[in-house]
Length: 549
Image 1: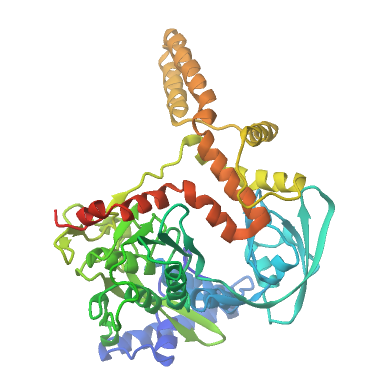
Image 2 (image 1 turned 90 degrees about the vertical axis):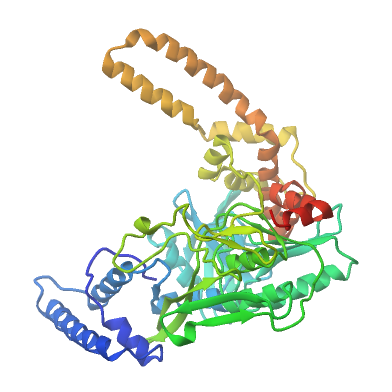
C-alpha cells in the first residue's frame, strides 16, 4: 500500500490514464492535452532512468516511489494498493479474506498475536492472544516485516500453512498446521442487554459489507427480550467503511424520507442525496450513539445524521473529522486505487471534515477555525461544521499518567500472558482482587517499570536552567518539590486501583473466553456506556438534551 513518499512530484499521467481507461471519468478537452503531455514526459524520464542510470534501477520500485510522491500531494485517504495489498481491500469492502484468522501486531519488537478471530482456524486450533509467532511457512519472522507475515498466512481457502509460536510457560514453543479458510470478520462484535437495565447494546466494529444486516439482526434479537428503554450503538474506535452500509444502518432509526447524507464532488455522479427509503425498524425507542476520537467516516455519517435529525443523543468525545468519500477503482495487474471523489454533508448541510485538504496547500494551513458557520438540527439545536461530530453529552476519557505509561509498555497485555501461563482457567465473570493487583505490581517491578509525571519533566527543565544560571542555592527548595512529587507518585497506583483492576480483568478474560466475553465483562464499568444508560433511562434528561437551546 502506498500513501506517502518524498520523491517525484510530476508523475501526473499514470494513474489518471489508468483511471479513465477503467471507467472512472473522461477528462475535459483542456485537461486531455496536459495529461498526454505529462504522460509522455514521464515515460521518457522513466525509460531513460531504467535503461541508463549509473546503477541498476529496480523498475517496479522506481514506479511505486513516483506513485507515492504523486499521492502525497493529495489527501492521506487516497491510496494505491499493490497486488499484495488486495487482501486489505477485501477486508475494507467485504469484511472477509482468505487466511487463518490471526490478528497480529508488534509487541516488544516481535510479531505477536493480538487476537485470534473467534471461530477461525487459528482460534479453533488453540492459538492464543499473546503468542509470539516465531516461524511461518518455515521462515523465521525475525527477518520479516509485519506485512510479510500477514501475506504468508493469507492464501487460498483449503491450503495449509505451518505456524510456530512461543508461549510463556511452554518450553520449546508450539507448532500448528493451520488450514486457510474464508475468514469472515463480523461488523457487530457484540450485542446484548446491559446488565441491570432494559437497554440494548450493539458494538459495531466496522462498516464492511453486511454491516446494516448485522445491526438489524442484533436489534431484532434485543427486541425479542421485550420492550427496550433504549439502544446504545457503540461506534468507538470504528474507522468507518462503506457509505451504503452507513445509510442502511441510519435507516433503521431515521424517519422514512428524511435526508441521511449528501455527497458532492467534481463529477456529476458524485452529487447525490441519500434519504431513508423504508420505515424505521425502531421509530420511537430512545437512542444513544457512543463515539470517540477514532470514530471516523461512516461512523460520523451515522452519528451526524442521528444528531442532525434529533433522533439520538451522541455520547462520548468528538469524532475524528473525516468528511471525505472514497471509491475503489481497479487498475491493471490486480492493483487498485482508493481515491477521494467527493465530500459528504450531514442532513443540516454541514461538513464534519476537520482538515481541509487541498491540492498545492499545506493542510494545516487550511484547518478550520472558530469562525466556521453554525448549522441547526431539525429541532433547532445549533451544531458546528468542521470539527467532527461533537457530543451532546461529553465523557472525560483522559487516562492518568500511570495508565498512559502502562499502555505504552503494553503492560496489561504482557501481564495477561504471564497470568494465563500460570492459571489454567478463570470464570467469565472473573473479578480483580487485592492479590491480583499485588501480583501486577510485583511483576512490574521485575520488568523495571518506571514512568514520569509531566511535572517531573518540568522540574528537570527548571533544574537545568538553575544550573545554567548558577543558582545552585535554589536547588534545596527544588529537591523538596521533587520529594513531594515522589510521594504523590507512590500513591498514584492506589488512586487508580479500580481502573487498573478493570483493565487487567478485561485483558485476562480475553485470554480464556475471547473478544465477546471481553466486551461483555467491561460493560458494567465502562464510563461511556454507563453515561449512555443514564441518559436513556431518564426520559426528561433525554428530551431536554434534544430540545432547542
